[in-house]
Length: 205
Image 1 (tube, helix red, strand yellow):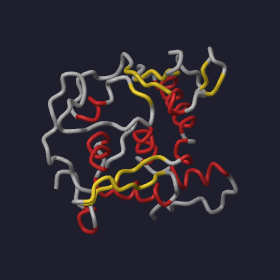
Image 2 (cartoon, rainbow, N blue to C red):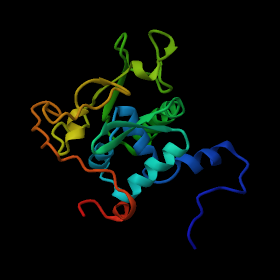
Image 3 (cartoon, rainbow, N blue to C red):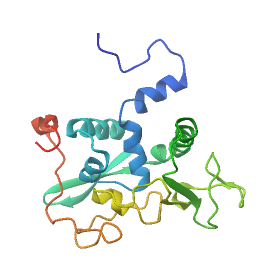
């Protein structure tokens, strides 16, 4: 019997939240959106997620008001997905979940998150110990840690190697390097967002 997607018998705010963000890949889509990924193709290549799953997650997150769909190109029509205030409010959850994973599964540190104003590393709840405040998400700077692959294959990962603030859009302009010494992305290489039957084709189909 297939698992349901809700927790109808649970009177619990955690259960309600899991109905929205608890499906596989959903939190990783939100994580990438916090990192500045906005466009369908960039989510696709960075996550390695099946096209149909990505399309479903983006649609669901938009319907729940976590992402906002914005048109960035008219011909051909293409949209990008930007976190709303409701989506940005998930940053402390992802921050804590990342720390929990590193502590309990012995993973090396992939990224540092610092207060861009003073350079201090954030505490476990996104607070700056020096400035004694919870740092607004746009003022969080992300830099590579010792466990991060400094020569990744995909251009989005290469673009994310440079120090950047959260929510700052990833610039995948084909005329600019995606990261340090990165090769240029070929013009016209952007995948279109699947529609209808195309949404069910696997990556590379």
